[in-house]
Image (tube, rainbow, N blue to C red; front, side, top):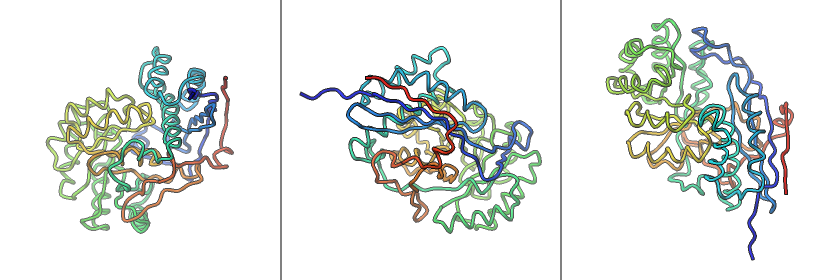
Length: 376
């Protein structure tokens, strides 16, 4: 008689990943934030009575990492003794434990680490990559690089970084805009387009720093540059403003990365606010809510370009029916033993079971807090 497998151990770790150099986007240029020097991550590693394992994580780019880790520790006892295959049931159980702090923000970001670990375990158990378990349309996804186009980088260096990315097999590049001097933004974007030629995909990210009129002026000034999209031209929660711009500019609009619930992202879909939607699985609660969003966006004719964390999003983007984009960031690479292959402008979906990731010794070294919750 087959017995039901159950989760017996949940290891929760807080990891601080230092960045090689301070990172500044428009939010820093306008005085709203300080340069970013590190990334805070919460890792969850689950093990069952039968010895099956899964790993997931969430992250915070500025304040909130300690809160995310603390909440994950609060949630860990509630998965002990549960069947790891009942993933939607467990997501709902953890959400109800967090009900007083809503189904968004830090609450669902802590849940995301458990949810992703459960999906990683399920795929490993089936000896399939996560993409194959979920049902993929493709084995490779077009990619663009963001890390070479931040502020504080002279335009000559941005162009050189773009050349290096393309030489590595990356298809497109993204650069930051949104500084107080709109003319300087336009000068830098024009210089990059002239350097790369007409055909290389270029994405532009304003990080929410414009009002609608400024965004419209910028959009009209660069409409002739054949940009792939303008990202977050106005406030992240201004779905009406994004819709207004999306309907009037030739350049497509992209947004969604800062939203922390599927409900907020659904507003972008319902209002046709974007041509490209940019959900972030660790920010909205993990694989489960992300995959609920996928068919809604596809049915609306909206394209997919998930934010950050290519290590997770590559698998999820491979399940999208029309060709998506995945953002290439090398920042998280030191945390894992494996690397994602790049070929012909695309990230190759790993064929290893689950996410195909193993935590590195360096990740263990950067661990600043850890606790184990167990039961029988």
